Structure formats: C-alpha cells, structure tokens
Image (cartoon, rainbow, N blue to C red; front, side, top):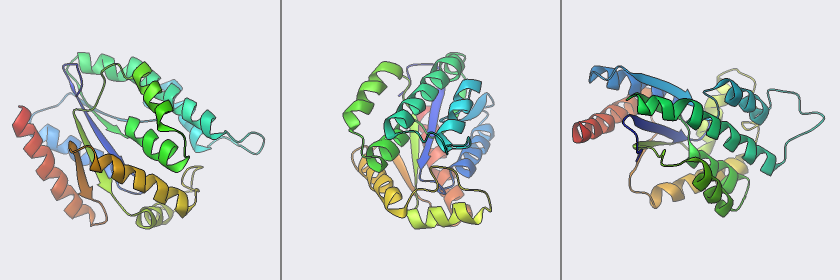
Amino acid sequence: MSIYNGKLIVVEGLDGAGKTSAAKQILKILRYYGIVNVNIVRDPGGTPLSEMLRLLITGKFNYNIDEPTNYAELFMLYAARVQLIEKFIKPKLKKNYWIISDRYYLSSYAYQSGGRCINDQILKFLDNMILHGVYPDLTIFLDVLPKTGLNRVKNNNTKLDRIENESLTFFYRVYNYYKKLVKFNKDIICINANQSLSIVNKEINYYISKWLMKIM
C-alpha cells in the first residue's frame, strides 16, 4: 500500500494480456466514481529519461553491435523505474492524484527472475533501495496463456520488439513466476484474460467498483 495521499493501481500480465485496454477501462471507472485527477503511465517509461531507457530495453535501437546482457537489461529497468518513481509517481501521489501503471516492480520478478533466471534476492535488494514505500494500493493480474498472448501481439501487425521476440519457453517461465506471485499474494486480483475484451472489462468493473466502495 502506498504511504502517500493518492492511490497507485497497477496492471500486470504477459505481453498480449490486454494491459493497455485494462488501464483505459479502469480510468473510465474512476471517472464514473468522480475521481478525475488520474494519470496512466507505463513501466518502463513515463518520463523522458525512462522512455529513452525503454527504447534501449525493447531494442528499438539497433543492437547489431552490442546486445544488452541480462544484468544490463535488469539495471536499465530499475534505472527507468527509479526515475519514474522520483520524478512522476511520488509528486503526483503527494498531490492526491491517482495513478494507473501498466506494469511495476512485479514485472521484473516475472521477466527477469522468472524469464532471465536472475536471483530474485538481487531484485529484492534493488526494491529496498528505490521503492521507499511506493507500493501499489491495488494490483490486477491479467492471466493470459503465453501462446494466446503472443498470438495477439503478432496479430497486431506491428514489428515485434526485443522482448516480444523471445521464445515461447521464455514466456512460460515468466508466466509460471507470475502465477507463483499471485498464489502467495492474496491481495492481487487475478482476472482470466483469455476471455473476450467485453467479459474482461465486466470483471474489471466488478473488482474495481468493489474495491472503491471499500476504501471510499
């Protein structure tokens, strides 16, 4: 839970889970309930420097000369995240803004510990350094099977980025780590994202409305 006055809602899930659509749906619900000071951000991203690091992480720059190592990727992600927290999330939360984040620190556990097989104790050490109480007030995990998610990404007719080009085996490692996180954290809301968008939105409406009525 955030220690600040605003609220932080995080949407987690594999590539192709529908996080962008979910964030927009949450925004609609918040506005319906009269919450107008809301920003949607993405992690990595959200500040000029973080967006530049995102380009490096996702391979939008040419890596024919120098492909990042797993640890270089990890530290770029955390550099982008600390910039996002210090320059955007903290100031907004202090001003009573609500923030909807497309990914946050749990993504690093799933992708870097699960997918890249990096010891999660390293991530816990980094979290202790940079999060400083900025934890989500609510986390929604969009549970989509790796093959389904990747098929959706490929059907978008856009060029796959460096992460999206990883193997199906990689994404199953990521998926299994996400499932482990959900299993041991009962506060994470898990929604079956293999369903149609309309059904997923109905479930989002239900859970967000239930949570709002509890805290307001």
